[in-house]
Length: 495
Image 1 (cartoon, rainbow, N blue to C red):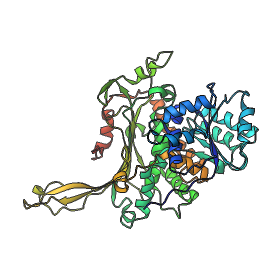
Image 2 (image 1 turned 180 degrees about the horizontal axis):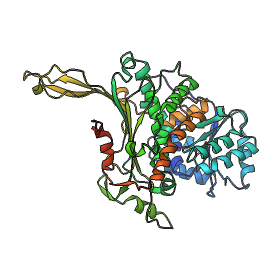
Image 3 (image 1 turned 60 degrees about the horizontal axis):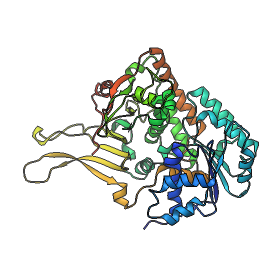
Image 4 (image 1 turned 180 degrees about the vertical axis):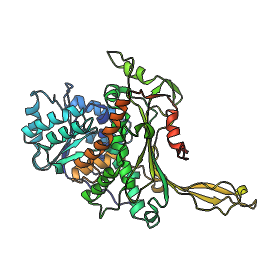
């Protein structure tokens, strides 16, 4: 039987951008679920901060509407949770309201203070400087930075320098919610807790690795941000490189925060460059057009941009899809390609890592037995987290020897009988605990941008527009060619 989760220390968690999409969809539900499970003690406070002219009661009504679905069977818990919720109207660049906010923060000096910056990155520095001015960076205070940290290496360094002038590196938590997913952490357990996998986890036994993060949704309300970012900045430079690091890193000496992050950093440093000399061969970028997704007709990217925009856009060179072939220049992974793809308006909503092992060196079976398929370890991050190990076995029965490729399938929900917590539930409480293991260190962010910047520069220098693809498909046909010219194919067994 699973032991009950231990409550964290009393805290004040301030969400800058408290009325925004991330707060509504992820942060507030995550905090409510941890409260229901007893990990958040009465007396802790959750403070929403935004420019809207709301008071505590008005904000609580918004939070109640947000959580009604999650709290249908627990109305008493919702009422208790809402008593923790407060609101302060603030503009990061104006003086008004900051004195009152600082007074509120000073009411509980023994609490751990967490400032979650769920805002545009161009407000990070302004907010941190204000917090420093009022002395709110002292003691047990932490700041959480949402990605993206800048839009290139230079801007990331400016943000890190200016935030670092207020909050020490040990107080700074750069969040990547993919690292909080159960399957990502299970990758550590699979690799380093089982004698079966780690001896095979190298170029001698692994043929290639695929990492797919696919969405069926378009850009939606994020259009103005997304058109200045694109898929490489939004997904590859952070989420997908972090997943690659978790697959490829050497065994850390322990699970201490810096031991894990040191090994991830070595992977980022070992990535072979992609630049103007090889970007055309190793990368594909695309942009979705009108089509069908989840049984409905959907508009193209330009139409989505114009839906909420006052100034109409006729053309954009922003990519909504990226596929690329990366390689790691070290002894463990020499010659093993890592194929990454991500995009919006694709055929399925799925995030997974596929580790494809090399085929057996010689088949003793006749052609009538059927083909021999490669063993694959598939780690599903969403929508249903779990692990599959595909093996070749004999089909049962007396009709001769017939080979079948079947999975050993473990769904976390089915195996453990519990719904897995959302990644933000784990990560938010890790900040309160002061555990930075699953957060990015500054040098990781810099190394990731140092690798991504030449790709962006190569695309800009080429002058080529992203390749169009129809919504509801798996992206441009060039993405298929990228992997198939190596004699491989994208894994799309999503049953």
